[in-house]
Each structure stands twice: as C-alpha cells, then as structure tokens.
Length: 187
Image 1 (tube, rainbow, N blue to C red):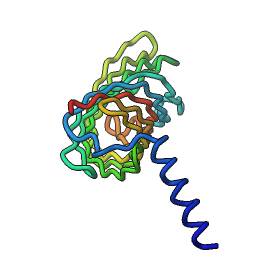
Image 2: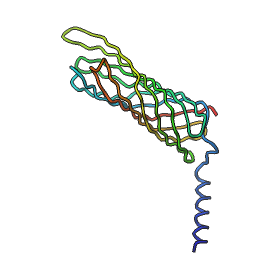
Image 3: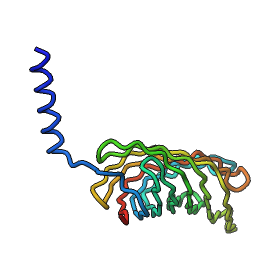
Image 4: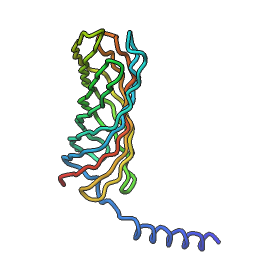
C-alpha cells in the first residue's frame, strides 16, 4: 500500500512540475514598474469636518533585488486628491523600503518596512479668503504583498500604510494604499 501511494505521489509531483513553470532562480537584478492604486484616509482635524479621501491613482517603482530573499525599492505614489467643502487637497509620497521575500516557485510573498516622505498641498477657502498651505514629513511605512514573476515580467498586489501629521496636526491620518502593479526585471 505504501509503495503504491509513493508511486502515485511521485507521478503527481512529476506531472505538476511539467505543468507549472519552474523558476531556476529568483528574478534578481534591477527592476522598474508601475501600477494603479487606491488610497484611503480620513481627513480629521480642526475645521475639516472629517472628510474622507478615497481616490484611485498611480505609483512608479524602481528597485534592486540582490538576493533571492531581499530587495530594496523606491516608489513614487500619487495618493490622490480631495475637492470638497472649501478644501482642495493634493497628496503624494516617495517611499524607500527594504523587502523581505519568500519565494514559492513563481510566487513571491513579501513584507516591506521603510520610510515614506509624504507631501500635501492644500488650498482652503474661508469666507472669500483663499489660503494655500503645503507640508511634508517623514514617517515609517509598512506593507505586505504577493507577486508572480514570469521571467523578466511580474505582477503584484500590495497593501502599504503609514501615518501622517499634516499641517501641524490640523489633519491627522492613517494612510493606506492598495495597489496592483506590473514590473520588469533587467536579468
């Protein structure tokens, strides 16, 4: 009975290996990418009425993967804009992160930790008076993701978050971004 089970298991493993392409090694090297994002954060603060920013936008990716389990990455993320009730807010971030990866055949599961340099520009209208504000800052960022790679090409889905204290506490928020991106590795 054990011999039959072992033979069936070996046949199953061989047939699975023939169907699923094997990655001889991780797609190490320099890579670039772009994706679409959905960013969400609540605009909480004095006089802003708890508006919520929920906007679709984009991100640009540049990275280097020196080892199968480690990558370094910089992203530009357009976090979106809000145009409501006298507030015109435009936000973006540049993140620099290290990624720890676990590779399973063509699938990568990863976690990221790094720093986000966020920027916010606002035009606020109070009783026929327009005020322009801009602010930026550095905050820790964290994220998780899953990706698939097919030679030089890859696709991935990711969740990333950081907190921001915008305009000296006038706007306080936890910013979260979900993205779907495509990458190209220079092998």
